[in-house]
Length: 502
Image (cartoon, helix red, strand yellow):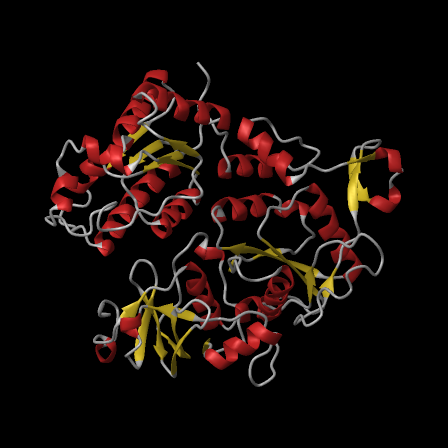
């Protein structure tokens, strides 16, 4: 792709690329100086040194590899325009090294960045500030950064106030964006602003969690970013005993300040340090599993645990299962019966009422959403991604999307799962009818044409079907009637809490 819109004439002939979400966040933090001393994406030697020992090749401490992955055809260029998901150019990468990751075989580019414009994508952009601007506005003295991917409940709010008072510090709350519910996270933190110490700032920062990073390296990365924003201390996890966990925080850019353990005192009905509570008056806080169960069932979150405004945002981010968006994704060979079962499920859900149901059948999608695509592997993957995108949008708005493509490749199914689970829930049903039975049915004559060589790359004959190992339900329609198969899926949805029992 060639970059054109919004570029100086001298750059309009350069190729362009949109990084993935983590790399896009890295790009913004590089451009704003939050990743100092880094000025661009790392090369192979620096990346290897960081992975091995947490340091750049020159010995500078740095916790995680900040790299850029591109398609192989872009590795021949000396400069590359990096753009946001809407195609807005953000920076030009001057390529100093092209390298292939030895563990993943991905192609990567390294080099310094030339900023073009400040990023403007993502939620709550009006609150997002450059690190140097925030640091310049902070008062003299200690600054305690609270860098979090979760809301602050009553326990954490008490710990923040106590720790800030102990340090005599201004509080800088940094919602770390890059999760599935960024908007709810920021709103939940804004809702408790009055419960924070006077003068507290809330500044969202694009720093998604990195799947390969362990907690210690994630802590170090947060400390580097917090330091760039002017923080002198980073709030860490509480330690159970005095001195426990002193090793955590070693190598951080700023000291990690640990709060004293707190609990809910059921006798006086307040949160306070555990040391000040009689042992038999300590009430256990809700575990994450208990909290999610309350939300799944639509039950109120107790006010002793979190402020009502935070509870409301949690309910928005995780609606009750009966109202939550859901995608039921059928996969199987041509002729396996998946379309029949999918149509039967759609009819059954419509008859029960209470949910908006959309059926995305493979053949119908091919004629409309994916008209013009061939049956090459690339086009088949694109067809499934398009189905996944539409299903994710239906799910995002609380509907039920029922999809019935062949979807033969595990990697593409996993991509759709991730896409949908960012918006709601995903159920995978493998219609595992044997090939012999599918071929016997062959009402469209496709298998006969494939055997005759008239259809190249036909799944099950001349192209593989990768059976899922992560299916929530497996059906064999050679052993079940359509009604029985639909009943099995309905039983799964009722047991999972997405559908009311009859």
